[in-house]
Image 1 (tube, rainbow, N blue to C red):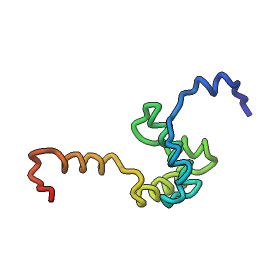
Image 2 (image 1 turned 135 degrees about the vertical axis):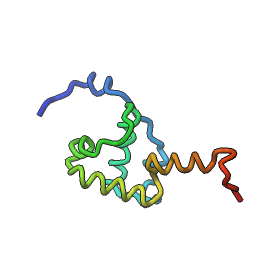
Image 3 (image 1 turned 30 degrees about the vertical axis):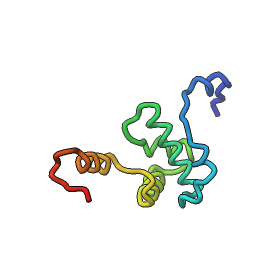
Length: 103
């Protein structure tokens, strides 16, 4: 196993996580595995990735890319993350003059 020095860990970058999320993720219906996949995904996005790399996350966690994808789908089905398409549709819906009336 390749051993990283402490300095490499410090210089690898950081990702902020809500303390409340860490304390209450089970109340949101997340499993331990879902929380870890979420954190890995957030870290990738914080480092500039445009979408999660399920293969890379799987390698970090010892899971298959298919399993990571399934976990992400589970998180999405709980309404805790959105796909890029869903975000775009919401932005279009909320745009002034889009012809949609909000009640």
